[in-house]
Image (cartoon, rainbow, N blue to C red; front, side, top):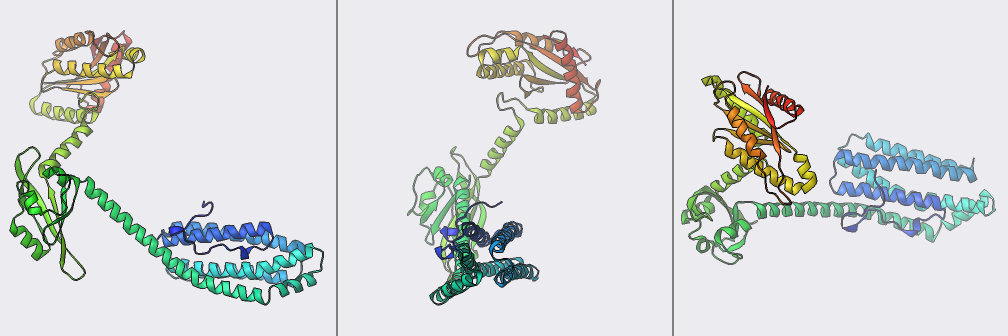
Length: 483
């Protein structure tokens, strides 16, 4: 629901309130102000290019409030003017308003044109109805309240609404007719300008943050602007006014033929040799585009250098974050599942065996409670180092969550072939560990399942090893057990 008065673009509204609209009856004047607020909000949405559902929602609220206002207003008039012709005429005007809105909605015109028609009609109708009809009715009611007859009150109202007041009303109506059209056009132009500026800001932010080196020159190759990546590449903080060929010499090889092709065809794309921050030379993908003015003459050149190796490094970094535990650097559940799948494929080809060992630390919660989470994190990192030192290069140590680790031990001998390794791991875990605040002593429980004795898929292998771990825990912990 829309609440309160919303400022238009640049503070402009299509229907500015004027004290001449006051009727002298507080409740009616308050509702008139609310109607004007809602009309302005509708036009603001139109000027900003809001979609049809948004416009319809605002209009439906406006229409509902108009209906409520009519009911409240007619109740006031009926209380004092019941049965009089002036009341019948006023109620008829309300019905004509509703019929005209319905006609416009069902006209079959495009949605934006219908909204334009409705806004224009509402602006004119509200100004006329408030200034002429409602003010006249209010004057009659106030006269009756003061004790004069309805006919006397109507005569006095007609006299007050004639002459200079009539000229004022007609002048204000003409002003609103013209003002509403010009204001809506101005609001749309301002909103359009704001959208363009927002797009330019977004484009600027993208260029500023991209890893590609971007530069802009004038038609002679003199630098106008460059992004931070370009400045870092050549080791300068300011480049404006310098010749790009001279400045990039030794960093990027922009040959004369590249400039000629960009000038002739509008753009050049291809490999050039560039020197990386490491000092090594490698191919760099370059784009050089010509930007022409309204007369078709080249005004600027825009160059972009994309280091392929940098993109590869970025991709590897993203993959590393996605596949590894942030605290310990160990493979996470995602990478473990992939390696388990590969281990199954290898076993099917060579009749091999591997063990899935689900490990949980005994007493870890006590370390967190006694020494704090920072000490707990240090302990987990130390456990990760000890586990990694115990296994072979072909094996995997992963951290799933909290103090839960999984060891994937590949190419193991027959049943019980990893007993000695598991015993050594338990002994390693039980060695005292120095962390901030103390020297906690913990132990570990390990549940093991062997593939292909257990020929389940990876998720079930983990579940079965976890069941064996639970059995160890139930027996007091500090040991290992097979599923």
